[in-house]
Length: 82
Image 1: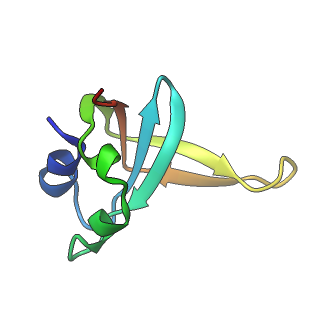
Image 2 (image 1 turned 180 degrees about the vertical axis):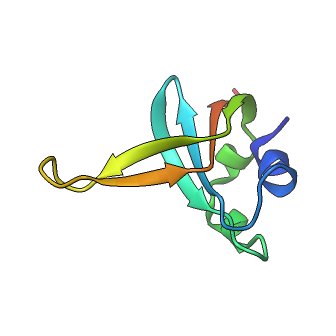
Image 3 (image 1 turned 45 degrees about the vertical axis):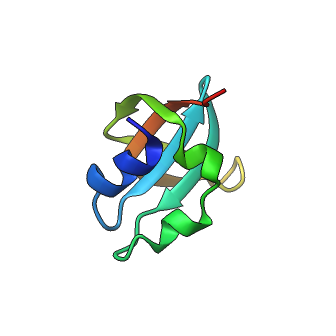
């Protein structure tokens, strides 16, 4: 399945979606109600294949002394098309 198809049919409005490749976080997007977020994503990313998906994760942002925990509703590992 392509990333674009996954984002359109397997996510809900308000989901924060993380993209990883080889375990490295390469992108993150917020799913809005009108699929406008798709226009802001790279075409190569949208055409990449989803290798596997996790339903829930978290990440920390901010400085090391006072990090902020952010819940990620969907995390997908992708494989770039060559």
